[in-house]
Length: 187
Image (cartoon, rainbow, N blue to C red; front, side):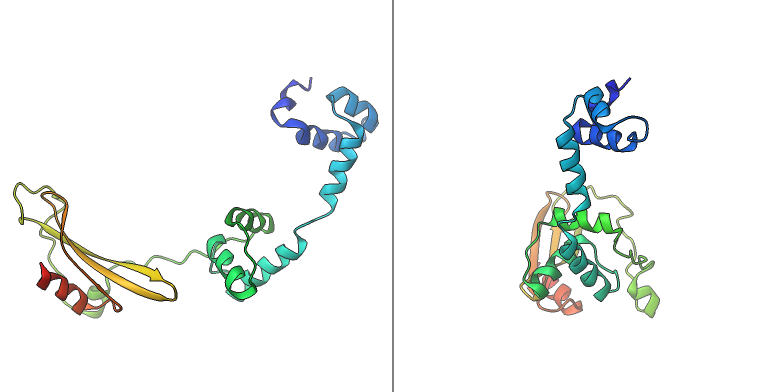
């Protein structure tokens, strides 16, 4: 009758004993499931005592302070920066899940910045054909941001699609047109 309970382990069996306590005595149910009665009561006592209560309250406070914008990774950083408490990110995730806290996902901005401000938008010349038969036929560029301490650095790179080689790169403290233009000047 209870063969399928082996998959859940001892903890699952204790849960069944607790749920079926009205049907029979705890001693009979524990004997039937092959677990100890003292272990059942110890598990029940641990369940009632929340060891992470103060930590949950602190996570809740950090979450509310930032209007629920951030997920467990950022909450972990705020706990370290603001309160000097280092907690493993997996534990922060587990506690946030137990509290029902989730980051509020912002809507993605549709359309490009340039098109919404009326600036010139470059024509799509590649039309998703990223194969090049000779060097310097097709170049692509991108800007990536890196956080170093409390500052942000922006790296602009130009890649040749023929051999996937980086032709030129430039780093700046500002993400602006000058960064991209200096990268093209180096190329």
